Length: 114
Length: 131
Image (cartoon, rainbow over all chains, first blue to last red; front, side, top):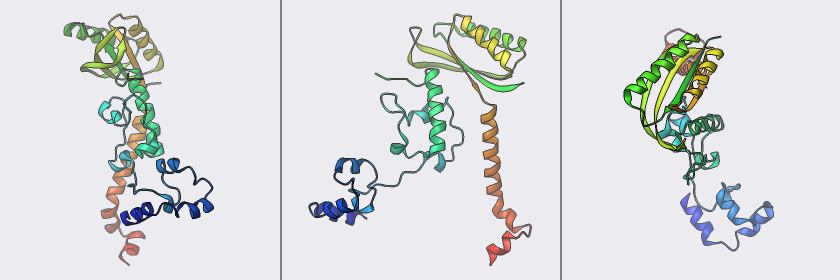
């Protein structure tokens, strides 16, 4: 896998053409970098598949009192980190969101950290 | 209708230990008078608040775990709103969550049990696995 990526980066000029023909959204290169590449050929560098922490560690109860756990899913400014960055699955993200919001209400987590 | 609730509240940090105990006792009394049963009253200690509440940056957290109906909760919340040392509180209904967790636990247990259970009673599944 790493070999493939290095090859692609070494030949940057011919690569965009066939991809551009196949997929209309190819010209916006920076956007392709952020998300998974869409087509496997368009992926610039190797990224490990993210897995849901709650599914893997079998955490059933996402409690608002567990600040340590919730803190991992809150950005520096106090924002809830989106699913696409953390890899949490949808049902768990939903519970996580309510837990974080409850924790904010009782001043365990900040609404906005300065 | 009795439901299980968690009531967490923050007491101002400058209140003395025995006064906190007294406050907990009185609130517990009010709750039981209103028809609730307090199963657990836990002091979670002093903590730094994530943001200032009534100009305090610290607070002593107290947690009640109780069985109550809506009226009792309403009464307790009213008391806390009135009582001056309580600076913030939150009530969370937990019965549905407990139910959900119980269900998950049961499913998980049955999954763990299945491999040995499948071999012991001769079900349709075990010969298929062997073959």
